Length: 178
Length: 295
Image 1 (spheres, rainbow over the protein chains, first blue to last red):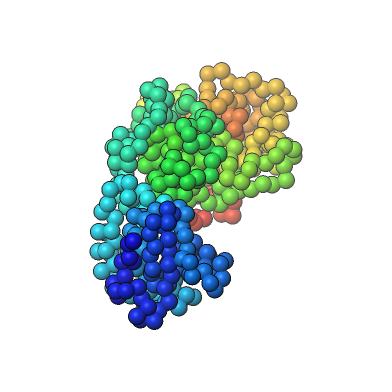
Image 2 (tube, each protein chain N blue to C red):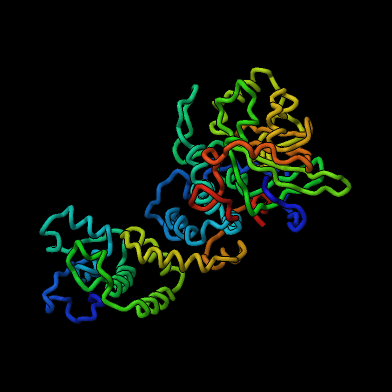
């Protein structure tokens, strides 16, 4: 069982802060995280609201996020979570870490293989974590900027599915912007 | 009038007419399918998820070169571009004009386009916003424009009297020097709102105006009517452009895209500028009402 990547050690109960348990899709991993970190996800926020007061008893299962991805996502959330954990202020309050430190973290964070990057994008989209979604999309944008179609296919691992005739046609149709 | 492509602009390799139709958007691609919402299977997630792609391209400011490139990457990406990305480019460059073109007004009959759709498709509209198709007859080739201003007031001057209820945007003419000629050729383009329900189309059909055999819409590849031949080009049109009397030609395609050219009278001052255009104009500029487009 993986434990939460929580820098304060044993899951936050020692500081008296409220924690939330998030469970991966295959039920293989449970993560206990600070509420402030978990609430960076609008989806989690909504699930808690809908479930009411006793939600965190069993943990919240996230059907679309596997264990590996969830661990990575929570690494981001823990880093970017605001210092204060009061739920209404969680979004507006500044993160506990400094700006530069966060930028460095973000740069390192997205140095992963394409498969992981895609999983992160999908998870960030499903979990509605704005900062993570923007970060991953910007990373992908930077990867494809200025590239040719072949280079983009290679970078993103996409097959074209075009027949040679279709390929010619689509290139002709789209030559106008150059 | 716009300053346009007098001498410094290079004429690019893109053809100025007869572009292949962009209309294959209703084909189904691979196992993804166009109508499918983002599902949790692998095909439409990650980079192929249209919401993700929209965000990625928003980071790129919907750069048209990048969009044209990504259309060539795969069928799925082309499909998403046709449905979402080109639309977002149009909205970002000309928000008021797009809002006006897609507004579901009181139609004379027939269903208005569903929200999120435009007659003729988004790729064609994007190209129309950003690409001057030149003038084949004067051997002026099409080119990517840096700056375009579209005006409803200009459009109005292209509508014959009984069709003045239609809404038409027309661009300023893009000026081109022609070797061996004293005068410049002006190339312009435009688009109707809801052309299929317009008076203009009803008139064309009513007169049984024939469709052209040799000219096609440079934006969507559809067939066109020649408006001068159909007797539907009012004199206000060449006056508005500052063109020589009678020396203009323009075509309207079945989707409602307009393209045309004229010989510009260099010596006259701009006749059309005396009208107050400001309220009617929609300029293709990112995010705001005034000003001119960023390519």
